[in-house]
Image (cartoon, one colour):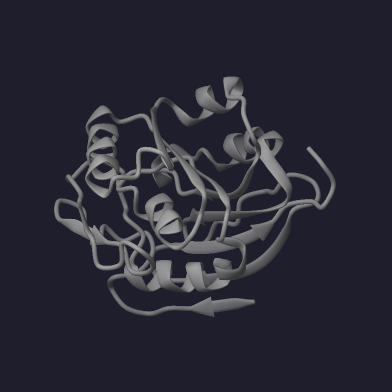
Length: 202
């Protein structure tokens, strides 16, 4: 199902860059997360995140979450705020990773949120551990990483996992075999899509 959200503060816009974003639901509702102005950083807007987490609501309790390009931390921390059991936030930018660790400590979430300072593709090539049931893939658009990242992510997904992907409006990234589009919305700046992975095991 495709939706279109109009307006300037949409997915992919630099909403909050150099300012803050807020957690919009759950235990930490209303908490502001300071965000530095960094190249390629595009915090997903409140409206798009609210729509996304409405889609994901039944899957959030107890979820194992992977946020591959964590940036501001808004997606991964929102998921934990709304009931996810664990989240791994992967971010290669040292300043952003340091900010994420500060957020996690301030929220008292060290037992539920792990911050990894690493390149997403390098981390996927060597990571081990329980598969994730929800993954967020919102890389810097200029890097064009979707075609490399999505197949590399597939082995780390639980059966029928949910994968959220942001990309430029005209770009629907090629999917690994067996993935199905569940919902999508379009803004002037981005395409935001939620996929369901295959039912079969990894």
